[in-house]
Length: 351
Image (cartoon, rainbow, N blue to C red):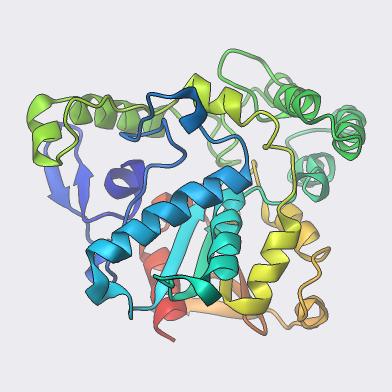
């Protein structure tokens, strides 16, 4: 629901809680299915503790089953090209679901015509994305002393990951940069920033206010009735969901991503101003992958990407893989540059 109303859906909520059409909606030229995931977020729910996902395997199985049911209900859509798109933690979920699709398709009663995936501003391979020290130093948010402090904590986290101490690694990571809202991080203490979404914007007050309004709007009984969700509550943050995924967060899905890049079209984009999962750290893990065209990727020539004669960013291609940096965009590129993202998606899905 957040993606639908805040990012790329046909509607957006205004400051006075009225609904307007979105000019840059992806639904203009795509049929879009929005899924609240993982179970327990948005309007999705479970009444059984076993219904909460614990890792990529359970997430992949859940979403796969949902997609099979969808295509059983709408068989006329089975022949359509199917793409999955997501950002941030979806960098873990999309490869997990794709892995199940690729595994099940050969003998499936309802094969899914997976053609490509889009992953934006995402965590995929934590151990190879833990180089914030150099990045933050180069953009001037920390000095050499801060860089040393960051590197010491990063090395500790890497050691915990290599020893498969998953929950301890996550705890240490949250103290470094990606904390819950009640815990100060080293990043917050050194920079004064309370947000990791954009290095030009020290806080998320505007976005948080918008999501808060959306949450209230979606609790309205008339709205619930119109979108057929019954009496379900809308959850932006579900502590139970986070707790169940504790042992998953710092695990890598690099093998699944490499498999995906060998079989379908893959687009991975990063916002130029993102702090949480910046371009340089994404590029670092991409260069460690084992897909068959990885050497082509390492040697690929960067191209300037123009939209209406304006520099929107930069692209690289290698086989089925496309890497993109979105200019003047943070963690949520789709919010910061909706016109350019629509152009990017259109070119990817329709080429």
